[in-house]
Length: 222
View (cartoon, helix red, strand yellow):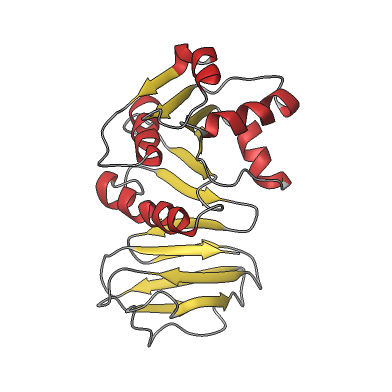
């Protein structure tokens, strides 16, 4: 399985687990200005390893660093999507061939600005809708010092460990989600606002969610 990490321009992690994900990745893509944070980390912890690609509209990367990394920079000037989506397209097209499983971990999706955090995490559901990732065997998650976030499109079970924080978000107010393994059942939740199914806790190592129909939901583990 190919392990791909995308470094976004949010807060760079300080804890061991997300840093280990970066250090052990097979391929690394940096979003525009995130290249600077990655290079500082790489020079100290990864013997100066370069990213495989720097992708974005290049509106915020340092000119000196842009020159240094000129051989691996891929400029996309279109403004209909953000740099994270550009990096996702690049990763999917270069390292996720049909019929082969892979994982993509996004680091730096949050922090610094709440609007960027909300927008970037919601994109995980959009990527599922656009690219049918789970059907292709591609696992996508966003990992920070505090949370792991992933999207689902149908009924599922996931291992998270007992007494883990679990929050569920969905843009579909017609969706009903029956739950097993959560302290507070979600069976009666109507997803007409973001807070309804947040700050729950797991009572088992495994949580089972049964969706009333195929849809989109976002799971945040803390």
